[in-house]
Length: 397
Ligand code: MN
Image (cartoon, rainbow, N blue to C red):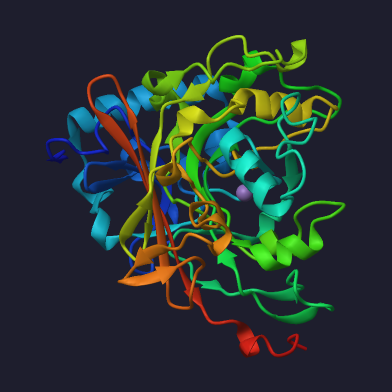
């Protein structure tokens, strides 16, 4: 047996306990919990088969009462002695996609982001559409291209037509961007025909991850009217490997900004589900933005209520993301198109003036939240840009 040492000020103390899927060497991927700089193999430590799986889905499907009970058991376990064979150093493990992703939806819940993008994409119109303050706007993304942090991102090809070009051309994206977001994982789903009320959020949603919604702005600008984002988004979405349980975010809960006009009754929050989470965006290891999640206009409980208000069912492993997190200040913008105002106000990275991503660039998003006594961490979502396949000259046949 061994005791797990938790370094002073660790973002992975006993009040965090995020879940992930890990392997060591050639061993089969299985569920672990992070404590300090260690990963505890839960199948080995708790003797529960549900953790000897390559995803969190089976555990998440067991439901809220079980999540609470397991968290109590883990807290007791790692506060005492743990079988030595169940403990690994975080440097020796490989992290995998933590869940088998069901459906994937991306929202657009930051008023600052939506207003900025409105001004950039439609300079001569009202920045916010008339529906924006009445419902959380979203679109269905591509679940099959959700990848775990560390996965390289191949620059997408697609149709682009710049405003000064007469006709579109096919080629490598010229305005590759990021979107720093928070993602929520549905643990227990809901049947067809039954919505999930805002008050039922915490019994359905298991936890949260960091999301980088890679975005090809030139492809997006040409394709998005009238049906919304498509190939400009679907080539890849990265998520962090550690799922922070909603149960660890109690001290981070805050009211959303004032919602005026008041939402319709079915979208009213019965309790506060804004979250005081601070993000940081690093471009080639240099911090360029600090997006504040507490500024998000719509809460994740409202997003889930809206998403199911037509009777659409949900399943274990469904992922919905918040949309780009941006605050009122320039340094709080979670997408480069906003941060650099469409390229008009570049930022200095590696001593150069930069607006969009170049091949070889790396982006890492991290986040922390208050716990009452300190802070907890989400780990990071990281990705590196690789050159377009075939140099973007022609579609791959
Ligand atoms: Mn997005």
